[in-house]
Amino acid sequence: MVNLTLIFKRASVTYYNSSVFFPPQVRRDVTKLYAFVRVFDDLVDSIPQKAKEFYELRSKYYEQLDGKDSNDLVLKNFVDLMRRKNFDKEWVDAFLDAMESDLKKSVYYTIDELLEYIYGSAEVVGVMMAKILDLPEESYYYARMLGRAMQYINFIRDVEEDMALGRQYLPFQEMMEFKTSLLDSSPRFNEFIRFQISRYFEYQKTAEKGYSYIPFRYLIAIKTAADMYKWTAKKIWNNPQIIKQRKIKPKKRRVIAQGIYNALGVYFLRNFLSF
Image (cartoon, rainbow, N blue to C red; front, side):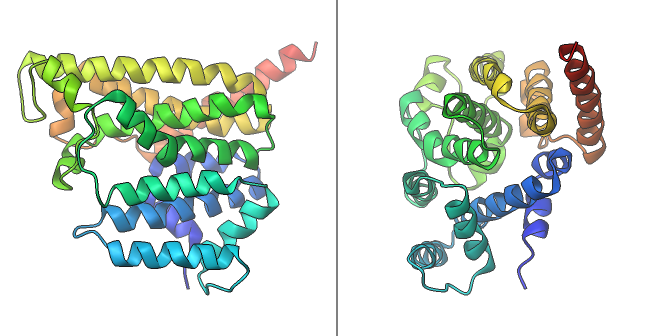
């Protein structure tokens, strides 16, 4: 039997361990969402890509949505969550379209092209998270920006991994402007990567303006995940060439320690504001 928690745990150290700071029901819902996006992502990211399986699973999703039992636990749980939390069908379609594009498109030439992809691959997932947390509509823009920021640092971090898949997400046009390549070991490459990291920090700074919409009991988990992405960005900024040597990801103990630190900070902030 498919184990949604195991899918979540194997896929992301940061998200999985940050999610322990959510209340149990919220964590269960986050697990259902993450399992759904992960199974589709894994199909298009496999070597070789599993295009047939992707289209079959997408068809099953629509069948489940139409009330026909797909006999797939991940889809059943997601559609139940989708209905209960009132996800817009367009958000899910945008996500699936972005995953499908990974079967067909390998290079992104401009930042506008890339942001169109990011909308489907990450921003709509941010809005779904906002729906799970019952946040007001005013928060949705910031939820999108947080999804965008996290996805952007993933593109920077995963340059080598994406090259193995025959993909380049970081804008090719900008890379040409810096007169570098993903195989370059010169200072020009470092400048290019730091330029991309600066863009990530802009997105992240905007996203953090939305923290005011998040209740304290949920903010710990969200902030912990975001802080781990900032930690990753800073590590790469200090040595851009490191992304060619290894994948920069925080260990479980770092995520948990940051979560505890944030919990203490939120506790004191909440009590300060109560006076």
